[in-house]
Image (cartoon, rainbow, N blue to C red; front, side, top):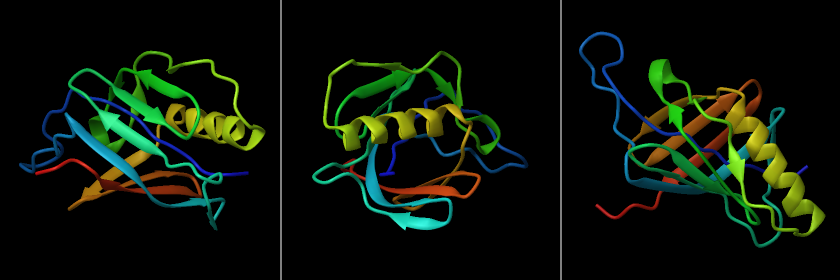
Amino acid sequence: MSALILAAALPLGLAGCSSPTPDLSNQAFATQRATIAGVEQDLALGSTLTLTFTSDGISAKAGCNTMFGQASLDDGRITMTTPLGMTMMACEPALMDQDQWISDFLSSGPRWSLDGPLLTLTSGDDVIVLRSTTSA
């Protein structure tokens, strides 16, 4: 199976002690690499996984359809607070499979961490690493 996408949104508060939770509002990310069940994967030919955070939600695109929804980033997890919606374009099977994988991944409550420009999403043995595409 091909790769992934991710998505989630805010509100954000304070996480743990006195460290503020990074604010991902108005930031966009694109895939660097993906690992599924511990094996590094390539995205479907010609595709890029993008994830954009807004003040009230997220959108993700894995090469075919656009996914969108509201989410919470509390406690280091992406938790969809509304069902993930998706456009309904028909694409090549590899892109459709990739869309489904990303939708399932985002709906699974993946853990997230931000280290400089890199956003890492983890659910079980699946890991997606994205790089910020937002200009500073």
